[in-house]
Length: 396
Image (tube, rainbow, N blue to C red; front, side):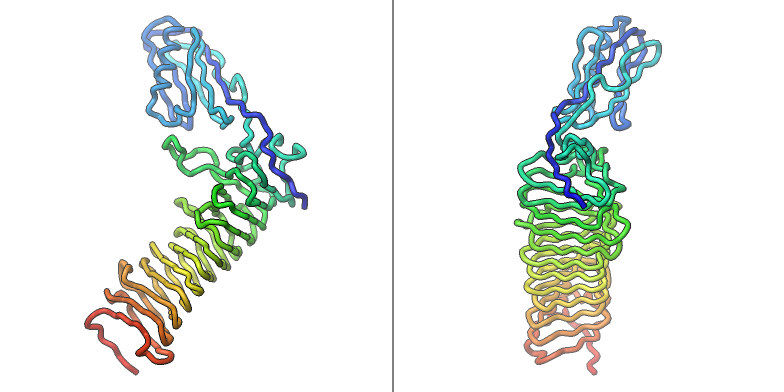
């Protein structure tokens, strides 16, 4: 395995298209298409320069947000479209019809280059992309990696991000201009080891394309959700020490964790697409929207369930569980300094068996729980229990 270091040394050069209106016919059309969205201009005269200007005015004023990625201008009959200054790739398809014709509407006149392009060899020390068995290393005050994020989709490249790295990796799911981002938004890697030392400022969006379990080690300095991860295959392992992680947050994304262990002042968020076999949370905050088999809460951790999160075995030794989901709670043990609150539950909550140790707190004022099967360990008088009014018990 070789460490391959990100440099971000490429020069930023925007893409440019130069398209000439060679003939204009009244009622003919000129079109530009970005991200399968087309703006059409209908010609009013037979003067090519006049109609080039009219088309550029239409493209500049288009309500299609993707068109605001481009700076539009015209000189005589020549239409110009220039992409973002950072060298973001923008593909424009030009068209004409109805007797109006153009030239130069194919490949860009000037190709883009960018220090933010992961797939550009000029952005890597040594001029070579990471390959199978290599580790991509990000460190220091360097450019973000925003484009070309699928270059290692099929390669067993692992990842190391150091806290000194000031750039970000990946794009937001929604572009700042308001459209769903159509470029790949996550760095795709097939390696089975991801190590992230987050600085609390940079954001990293990663897609695991690995064919076997991935081990993720994450260390963070703040609770900001800076590591956005999805695609983890079955039996993957996540070890979190502080910092903020969000797993499979976008619609349709899935991940599977055989084990997750979070410690310190952590912040963990999981959408409905994450399935957890064993989750152990010690000291921070977690929100779970998907299913789990075993959940352990200790050292003052606060866990909230949402959506249809459901579990088989839940243990709250020291900390709190707030049940705000429609799923079953399963077998529950609440320790001496543990708290369980079912008051947010939107519907009934199925419980297989329940154990309250002396000092435990149980709150179910709306009587959401069904199938109590409760056992007290120690002096039940020292437990704080709210089962709601007029609940009927069978004591054995």
